[in-house]
Image 1: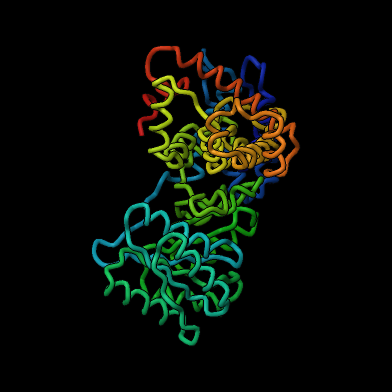
Image 2 (image 1 turned 120 degrees about the vertical axis):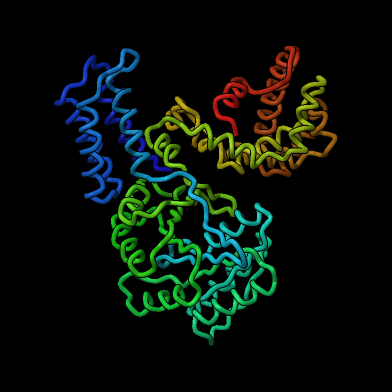
Length: 449
């Protein structure tokens, strides 16, 4: 996420490393590089210019604390200004006090609206709410079919679209059904449109007037670049947006849309999409995004991701094993590896750890490929072999390699790696007290969830 922007801003701020004092000259030089990094990331020029001016004023007035270097002082200021630029944190979806809450989702063609509707539905389903998904995209039957399939995936109800009806009538009919069926939230997926298409913009304006939604969310593709400014302003003028969802941040290495859209519309970013999976959807936290951009990691999101992805029953069983001195088996190891993949992979997790130079660790880019290979190998074993890996001799290794489609040497590598892990865990198991990862207690105290 935002890898290129992070690297370039880090390089710019790194030019202050080793300097004893801040001067107007080295501040100007550093901020010139930061400005170039922002513009190359497709941040709108007025937004980049205002941001640099605010940082410069604060930097020139800043008193360098005894415990901070000039580099740390500038990083602190840039972090605060980035957070302010990105807006409010974790702004909730507006819900109705009575009757179904209505959310209208709008955006450009190909921005990821339909998937976003399903991800929003998943968020509400996690809150034990009953959700109805409805499409008013009468131009693309495939989009209706996609939303129907996604509704089944997340456990939401689906309103069958009559393509012979006007979109506003379809939306009203879905909401009327929701009132009768005790449905909590109706999410209306609109047709993609270009902001220069006056007829299509008039159509969604009619839908908006007809249903008076509690939330009107604008979905924007993070890779859209400079066009984010024009499209966001046009949609806001037409619909009076209440919030923004930025999608495909996992694919974007620039980030201009994310840094520009809030400043242009004045509306909060409420969610960000960070992958194709239904649960690859995060509440927006400006401070955390600013920390990622500056290479400072994102411990809170990492902790939340672990909490969400961890199977509580499996975690308790694993803890009991460790506490009672029983050995981990390859099934336990596989479960932990699968969890890392569900959280975005090892490289993604490494970027959330402060001080971890994830882009400079040898082989980290191939780590997820290696994990998938190890999972395939373990899945090719019998339950008895997973529980007692010591019995896996030459003939068994050959069979397991053939079953997982790898060379025998990879099976041997996994077994050696696992034996080394077991030796380490036996040493740790001799220590008194409850088993836990180093530093986790401190993290819990500093960041109570």
